[in-house]
Length: 201
Image 1: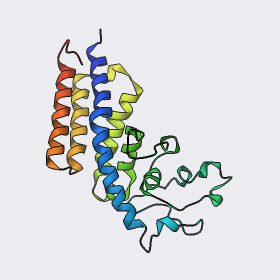
Image 2: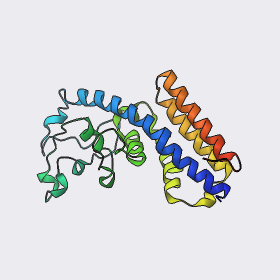
Image 3: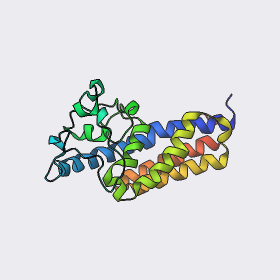
Image 4: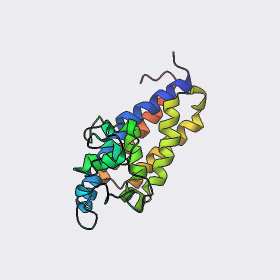
């Protein structure tokens, strides 16, 4: 039998994986495809960068880009030997995550919640729209706290706080109205399940 705290933790994990992250993936795929098309134009030319012409960050984001994540650069002896050409939008997305998160191969289930939230926190189009601010809160307060699995954290107040943050993020992403409504309704359904005693998940 699960304690109330364990149940809340479990429900938040389900929401991260089954509700929030799939919605974020759709946004990231659409936005980064458009961003990539803009960045291959002069003067950025991100697809033809060299070791002497590469961009260290993409304003207004100040995040230092992780070129080690693309083009098998992990096997190079130093960053001077890296291939800095960004060949597609998935490679572009990998620049905004830490190396241990860069194993995804598409904007599909291989892109987990940590990597997806990191992209929202670091890609310039999301920074420009202020989405990074709420994404940082979701990453720190929801995803990271969930990942550390300290059941005592998961009071009813903290649980409701996490759902509010996830809903705020979804609303900031400006999804199509019917899709946004569906995601918010899914959140509401799961939130209620986590707060009803003896409710089967």
